[in-house]
Length: 148
Image (cartoon, rainbow, N blue to C red; front, side, top):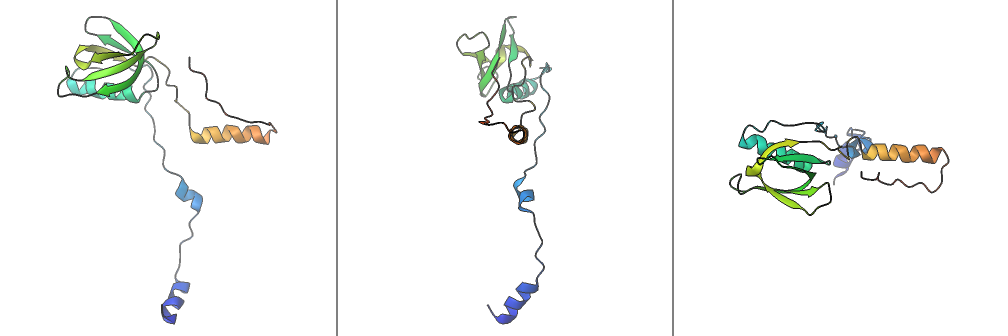
């Protein structure tokens, strides 16, 4: 590098950036699904609702076309070519073994359980930790709340 290039670099305006601003990513606003009973008028409606159920952190009630109900946590879904080839897998709330339900057998879906992660965030956890620390508490540990 020549002296002239070095001199021009020293005089270049470098924007001042707060490193903390670079560390913050924009948040994602979560939809309020608790209590929702989506309309399942089409194949696309059903597939979209089951995708929401998979991403939901609470229990749902699936009503089968035979009139039976399954309440539990949707932990997996496998999309096939048709509704008869597609399966949703549920951990029933009553503790019985996992079950698989074909999309073609589903008549209704309701988001009945409390979303266990609603309102939870890293920022809230840190704020609560520092409130306890500044209050003089010792042996501070943040534990997850118990599941129902």
